[in-house]
Amino acid sequence: MTMKTDAAVKVRIGNPGDFDQMMPFLMQMHAENGMAAMDPDLVAHSLLRGLHRDKAVVGIVDDEGKIAASVGLFVGRWWYSYDSHLEDFWNYVDPDYRKHHIARPVIEFAKRAADNIGVPLLMGVTSNERTAAKVRLYERQLPFVGAAFRYVPDVKEAACG
Image 1: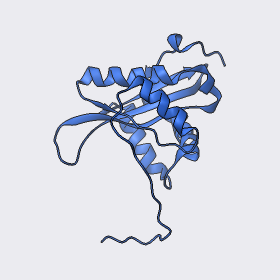
Image 2 (image 1 turned 180 degrees about the horizontal axis):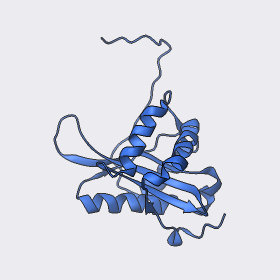
Image 3 (image 1 turned 180 degrees about the vertical axis):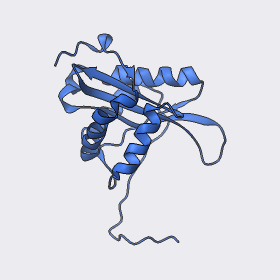
């Protein structure tokens, strides 16, 4: 690993040529933080939207041909408004690079992306590991606007419908 300090970390915009490296990277992220079963076709669809800049952008930090970190930012809207915002579908740093402090430049990339299109940025922490530390990082970089909680029922049958 040749990563330097966070001041020297460059986050580049992903392109379709990154697809083959990004899919295993996102599968690794899901194995660590997934909250539901992963469908590779859905992942590929979202990733391709981001890599083709279809109302989305993927930021990537490379280290000698390996993806060290990535953020996937997608234009969305609230269910009650036509106003758009930029939301993160993922923001993940490979475990081998977490001591290199590259999460801050990735968050700064996300903030610049929101500035460039002139919409609010929504980022959150959904994690099974070191959640409190990740929340503290976000609190230092972004204004705090809420919290999310998760309940998983024992019954697998849908109650609605």
